[in-house]
Length: 338
Image (cartoon, rainbow, N blue to C red; front, side):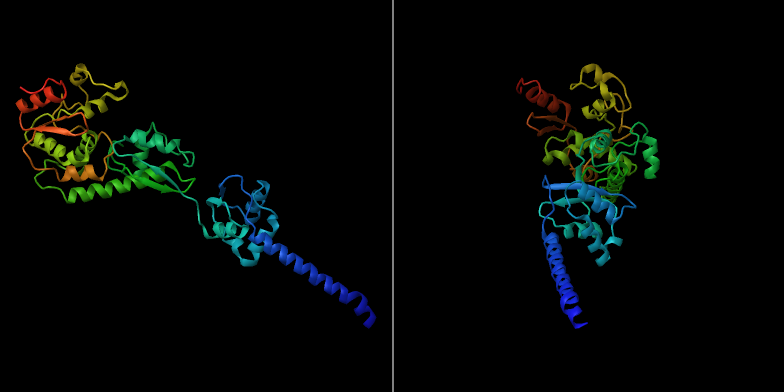
């Protein structure tokens, strides 16, 4: 028996220790060696129902992870295999297999950003969102009533009701996810503007303030003129004067607008033509930002009823038509003053 232990069992035990040591050393090196990437970042998705084995197998098949079984064994040992969360993830240069496991088990999902620009229309917003390859398209842009219903919105039009901002999202989020958040932000900012408004303003409700903010957004070439321009339009409303603002005409023209407004366009009636119709148009003409909402709710107090572009983004203001005509000759017709 002693000879058996000496010549068979003991050497086998020693060999097992050596093998275990080699395996441990190999596994340790594997856990500390960065995965293989051809680019600085690799994006991948985990679907609901995916297991650690299926994810590890996919990464091995893509040539990113070596020895997927080791990751599965480690995940089982640490119970992280039961914490895998569906979503979009990134693997970055320098990540080890254990970094990848920690990320997908903790739900540290990758993020993207999309900027919705002040003064753009809702049509432009939706086109920009749906063109993003990381956003899942679920909405039919030709059926605005369906989106309004999903938003549980009291409005009858989509224009102007989405807040322009930069939105962070996870790849795979839907177009409705982004628009729902933009709508909520818009309603919050609009209510705040309404609550802080000048009580003398001629608005019947927050929606009319929103309409005015959209006009101010489109008319403003210089931020410092925004409050004064808002003051011109509120002065006109109070005096029952036509607003006569070109951006509303352009909006009413739709696809017919080709870069310039002709006299006939100013004379062609549409619901948004403020040269032919008194008061505010029926809907906003764009999605206004916070500064435009603030200007519409707290416009500058002055005696101006007219303004004209100086050609450098700023505006020249006038109290009466005579002054305005002089400004038009000076800055638009370039005939100087008389």
